[in-house]
Image (cartoon, rainbow over all chains, first blue to last red; front, side, top):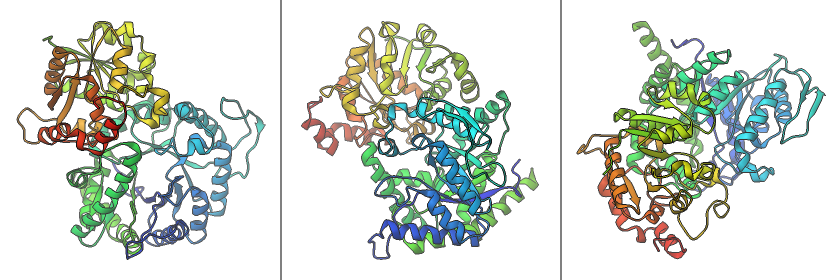
Length: 351
Length: 229
């Protein structure tokens, strides 16, 4: 059963370049400053988490999420500061831990790590890693990270990094541990790995119906039992756009999400997004688009169906304007989240 | 034409699991293998596709009338070609640079991926299909014959009888088929094609296949040495 009092809501951005009202685009620097302001707004509206992605591409402004999160920390009070995701495979776990422990210190315990293999792979050649080691890199670095998370001295050796002998890593966090999620695209192997390591899971549902993930959530719980590890409520992130007017929301989202999807498709070889495909995703799939009531109904359904502990909305896909982005965050915080809780409370009462 | 009752799937990732589910729904006996031991995929199979039998490659092959290759393209050479001797094999793989690496390092530049899979599995008959529709579309968009919502898959191979058998199999899995008889035509559905990742009905799929040489991708293919130039 969904625990409505513990339910969390987040917004995530991959650092898309922000548009001006005339359709021209802002610089990466301006986009970064805008994200910091959006973190501030999200905090004011009581949104629980802001997640910032890590990309190394011209179409995204953030390659160093901790730096952006540190700036958000300085202008906020309660919101948790997360990555979405940190590409652990091409990073050094010791450095990752140090940076986030630092963020945790300066934000009074609000840092949250979301580790992933990365759906983009630009970081591999950039930091001197071979894509053919994709799986081995993540496994090995996750093992080291798991040890670091205990905040005790570490003795460790592996293939991709110099060994450690009785090394301590600083600063220590005040809570003694960094909250850590594994971001998963839905491969069964990844889910079992996260359960085996005892991590929280955030599922990226970026295409198709949320329903098809129900068995995958069962798989997480079965695996956690098998490995005698804790079972946490699952978190989900999906794309969305909210506006006062449903039709307007659909048109803005179609234009921007399609542009985003098609641009990535050019390098990955997939066909451009059709209107039929977009409409399907918006109606029954993984795009949460529309007026606050429509989006709230769909989010509530997904939370209830998958028994989630957290739902993050990925915002700002494509080149949306400042007004569109900020108003979406406002509607999410002031209308959608309270309404989702209301719908779920009614549902639980009937059960 | 051979009768298919038992379906074998090599690869227990996203695509393999989806196809196992479809085959179970269609009433087939399904065996599936992952890259490691049966134990390693046991929980996954039991939870995600209950009813499918988790096996090792050799047992999947020995006990199946048709084999589906649902692995990253760069790993097909990990499978002994003798293992698949005299088998009808569906190639559902694609060249995908983010998992396979640089094309020239994985594939010879002058032929298509399925031709190279066929050349490696020289004792088997390869038919290409299930490669161009997204796996969640495959899972969500199966419909009975004559349903107006039905989607189509491209099926192609050099062996006429094998193509007919696979087309019939695709039909039972819930999709219409656009059929060609040249394995090299598999290039028409590879990444970069307007069909890759698209979910189309028979008419729309056929339209693009019939006018492939007019697509941007078709022009690129024609300009390179890859058939069908």
